[in-house]
Length: 357
Ligand SMILES: [Zn+2]
Ligand SMILES: [Zn+2]
Image (cartoon, rainbow, N blue to C red; front, side, top):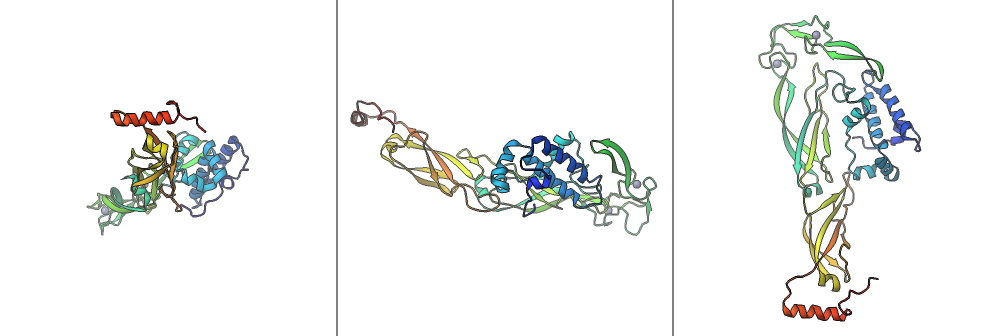
């Protein structure tokens, strides 16, 4: 992720007052211009395309656009956007056809790997390091990826002439698109070993288990993904490695409702405490703490435990925990208690509740 994000309107080249139609039109134009199949020689095209897709993802959504207009990138990050769902955009714009024929790369690049990490809500308070293991295709060390048993000859593929690619012309919303497909005879290698490597059977790649320490930033939310560039499957013909996407799943904690950095919890308050004031204990992510109940607290009133929420994803002050007071009326009073309650009712005026101010 880039440290300093560009203004989404500038990325798409539209005015801040642009209509939904203008935004869609601008993105389609950029998509056509930056499409890697059209623009294979510009290594920055993919990044630019991703930036444009991210800008479009936000600005095409009325609610997110509003948030962005008011709070900028920071507002979106604390609202739990931030990690792209580019595939959704591709699906929306391109009708399900993935314009990269992979995920954002030319042919020969390795596929991405998806993994899941499960955490408790408390774990989102601090940066976490989790070790994950996953199966990955990597370059065969025995033949160093060329697929031939060491010391044996390799022939050039006659189907693709050694390029490893077959070209296919198709029509799409971009007009005529020349798409390079991996050669089916040599599997995109361009060369065919006469004596296949005994370790990988000539594929040049082997499947193995890989273990990776994944850094999960504090403030992460359920469903967000951490991308580790280059930790995915090996590519063909020296193509770049795919990426590892680690999805974070946070076990729901029934004590809290989370809204970004804010937490909401309930606290039962005896009705007498609500009348005269006092304190009750509420769960926080760091154990139970006391919260003051002001005299005259009504059912549904809220208190705040400052700084007991979660940190924002990119650092900064922790959010707050909001506490909803739920008044509890005692039942099964013994005669003495009942008498005291009756005296109170009388003192407050014939058992009628005092008018609210
Ligand atoms: Zn091998
Ligand atoms: Zn071939």
